[in-house]
Image (cartoon, rainbow, N blue to C red; front, side, top):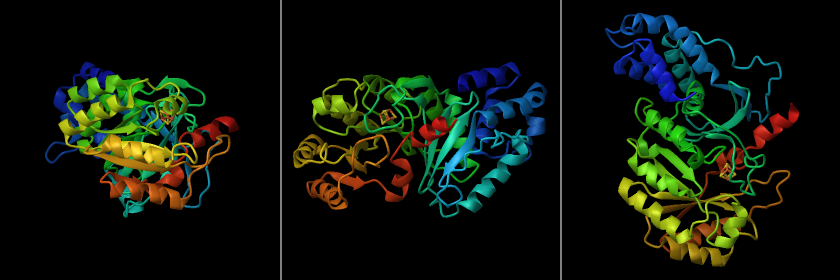
Length: 373
Ligand code: SF4
């Protein structure tokens, strides 16, 4: 489902922009529709009120929890094979929304919860979301992925289907029923640039009615030229993450087989222009693979490429998984790489280890669930 379709449906039921906004705010923030001196039951037009339970049930079914890792802090999957997980009809949001938010804040009051969620969509397809430290959430934008990065499980079966913008926001709603979410990164399953209309629609809703700061919305791409045309035109301009992984064009073509073949220097220049225009640094993503992209020569080229740039280098040690024949460099080597860049004035950091354990192998949980069926 797309948010534009949802808006049209509301309009067909007599909703004006103020009604749409209040409903979308209540849904995306998991909060009550009621306002002081303006309860939802008198605020919404009658036709919309009558249809509300059906709309809420549909929104609820967009993204349901299939399993979680670690589950209840014990490191176990809890895949429910009986189809009863999180599919109960939703009571009206005007009653449950506020309660849900309170429960979430109680359970994760220190915001340190890190967990990978396997999310079932209404057509039984599955994607992954990841709860990150400090109120972060990583969401998927596609089922599968066409880029086919050799170190990623998500791209193994290619692209299965696009996610609608409402399905992307529904992942945030699902997470917010569990805890507060103040940052959303579009780095889960899928290449956001291959689903631009839906991702931009979701970003716009999250950055307005969804109450997420624009710099806390992070659009991740392997470097599709359409991104540099589209993002500057949006009402909500997200921060940009660029998956670089190497400075060697030939190696990059092997690691990211279906990424656009653009000169790396040009990619960096275009990302830099966007960063200067928005005021948020580019976050370069670099999955560290031992013996492949962890050499001194790579470090030298990174230092040249990013000198004076408004940029952060995120080193993400590869998370070793069955079926992928790569290894992560040693802890010492990873630390030395970050240190070398920092000494040369390039801000480099190693991705948070708490998040990395569940983050490092995007698509693994889904792959396991599909195999089990
Ligand atoms: S790393 Fe990202 S772009 Fe590459 S295959 Fe996986 S999901 Fe797609």
